[in-house]
Length: 471
Image (cartoon, rainbow, N blue to C red; front, top):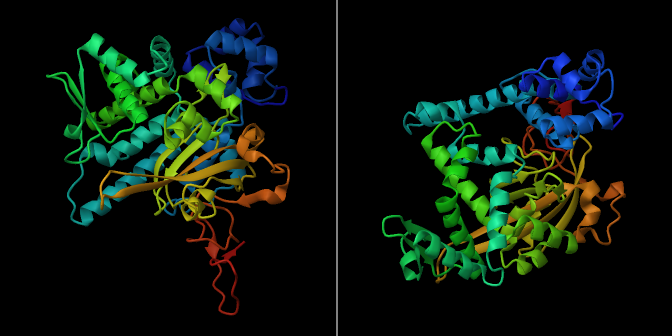
């Protein structure tokens, strides 16, 4: 910690709490001049001062770590690489802004998001699809806002997670589905109906009638899926106030978005009931994060297990910090959560060299990959396909590829790294955030030229890479 510079974060914390340098210095039992040097990165943040800061403000020590700024740097690089900016900003300038003025960096990222959303809505208007509402022009689509809400919180919601664990401890672990049904019946007078009534129409999995207090579940749900839906209903009935308080911490502009966030939080709670934090992280460590063994142990699916693994960031009891992504064959990202510095591109597509896309060529088989980003950071990825369909001939199938990744320094804790020489630099596959923002100009897999580079048009020269640029 002696070499770590965290002045900007220290200054931001002090200003956010409305404290003067003199007042904070008094609380930390240091001189104002020393605090001034800390905030200006003239002195390193020592372990002793760090401990007093965590005690005084209740923040985790990781708050002052410079390692997680990689996500902010990546988002800022993507924002400033937009064609509309037309200004080339160096990597060192981006890193300096993200480190010393993170609030300004986030403001620029938000402005870029709103610009792109406005352009998209304007295109829809020109295409004859009608004039969008004002709140839609000013922000991302509702489901994107909810996705960003979880992403910004590193996919961990402490209040709901603790409440879910308390419920799981109070229920019988032998028959969780039965225990959840009994609680709904006794505490809320809810009658559970499982069968064909929920299988018609649009393929409903759960429908609750608040007037008749009847919860209908599809008969096509497996026991673990039924338990998930029961726990979701319990969250909505028992923790409405907590859900609303958590939603209020987000910047949601419409009632539709707030409702979607509330549903997402109820699903988070349900997953935490089925896989309570303490027991799940202990099992994850014991099984070396073997997803299939954990799924069997907690009677849940592969995707639900991956999602839960990406939430293990409780202060004082953290697991491997994972990123989790779900994509379809067309490259659309329908789920993305991250407790690491890995950045998912919001535009320009994803990297075709990423093993998440290769997973579609070997359905049901687990693939591993050491992937190196342009900034030099390396990650270990596990990818596999999942498929679901409603019963009956001719019914459509949902097929996705799931990716679960962590920084390479954590890979030795995973069963999937057995037999791999993680120190071998030749093992890494160079990938990027997306072709338009990727700095690997010589990549032969490019779909677009990199923004900010001038194309080299030479009729007397042909290169293996599809877009040659002037360096």
